[in-house]
Amino acid sequence: MEPLNPVQIERDLRTTNERIYKGVEVVSKAYADYLDAERDYKNAYAMAYLAAEGSIKDKEAKAEVATEEKRARRDVADVAHKRAKDTLRAVMGEQSALQTMAAGIRQAYAGSGHGQT
Image 1 (cartoon, rainbow, N blue to C red):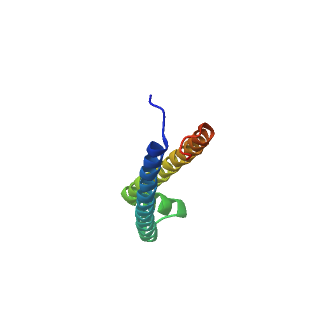
Image 2: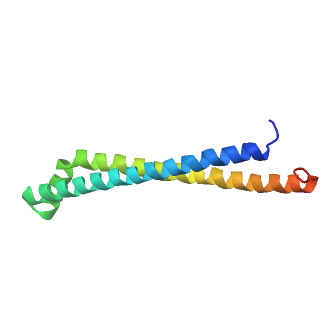
Image 3: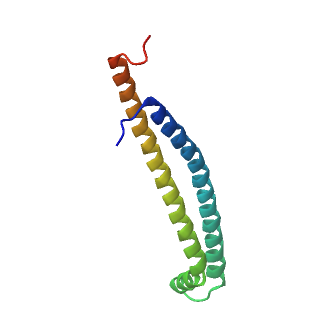
């Protein structure tokens, strides 16, 4: 493994910043998709519940069965949103580690006299 230098760290920080910027867009879209799926599920559930006959428990059970596909779509969208958020947090953690390394390298260069005229 080669020693790190300020140019490498700066390049890696720039790349990580770009990934964060793109990640925010991915998280936003995933959340919008989740909200759409949640709205579709709730509307379908309400319509199925109102159309069902029987006791409250019977209506709930019938509405659950009738909306299984929409609930599954909502759950998939929820997982995608959570995964996008987790990935963004991981990239932000990488950025923090790179910033810490950059500070250490700056101190090492300053202490060794490199970069001074």
